[in-house]
Image (cartoon, rainbow, N blue to C red; front, side, top):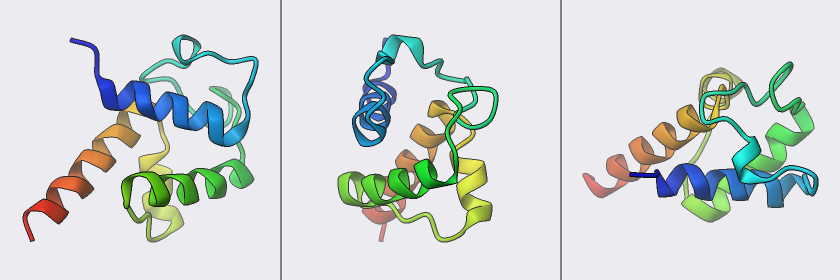
Length: 90
């Protein structure tokens, strides 16, 4: 079964960062988002943090968490799921 959240996150990345030449299919689920992977930088990370907070209500408190979360689309999806379930269990 395809992961809807992973697909949503890929679209969010493309729309937020205006990556018009990239389609969701071109972003690997486990591919690196920064550096050699998608080639994102720290400015892109800030834009994504804001978009994630607005769209999903998740908070990335510091750069240490950000580095872990932004490794790939899969790690991002896992973080969003964890945050959502933490909020739902309060």
